[in-house]
Image (cartoon, rainbow, N blue to C red):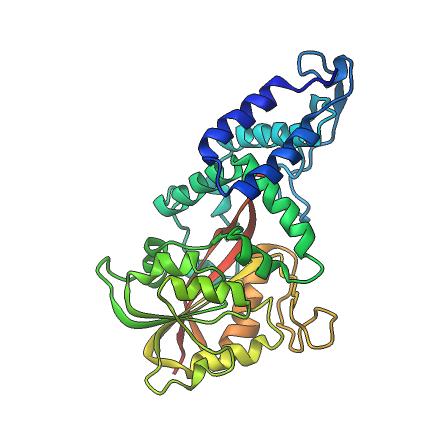
Length: 371
């Protein structure tokens, strides 16, 4: 007789109530997957009240010199489960518990003493207790706990991967939303008043528009660009004006604010893009640029298929402090931008069955034209 880990079944039962049995086809597929994943062979090894312990090494981060991130693996020991689904859910619970004790101020700190005087003066540490960041993390928790939905996403991603890019898969499934900055953090970086309002904003490579939506309340008109067709449909449904990726910089009246959040290390010609952004600004216009640390360029839609950019940004060093300084001195200033302030932020992404959320470290720069 087959046995099922009872806590896992209780988890599924709770999710069943939340899921409301729709759409029916999707629910039935997920139910079959859950049953096959949780089923175990006879014997006590499949029961959570009879377990063996396996030691595992804990890594703080896979980035050299970084000791400020959440553990990259599960804790030092855990019960043995034959069910892959149960293992994933159990590991996620442990990581979530670790996050409750994690000092989130570390996401925003830099070693100011390691900076050049000018870079140190321009650095602005943002508040870790940002309300919009907390709302996003809570939404990540809710969506990650939806086991049936996550199982469906897992199967769908496997089937679609040979035919569609990862970005487009996320758009089709309406998953993988990302969070970079809130409107309050935006105003702080540019030293703007709480009632700041402008006519037109452009968000380049906006994805599903999650971050764009947070900033949109400050503008009368919001324009976006995106290469993924499912993401374009989502952006249009949000009410944003979707611009052509090749013609957005031809607007005669220009933009008050242009954002390029985690785009420069994902496009083939980042220097050209920066020059176009500067040329498309209104007088006294603002530019917000975010770059993931460590800097590792990867172009999803490269022309020759090697995923490497045609233009390489002169970002040097290994530490966040060194890379941020070289980004300002070697890239932004030569292109014609003046740095108003810069900071460090967590670049957050919705998770899955194994992690409630994923995160990278972002260097973010508030810029104006130096003219």
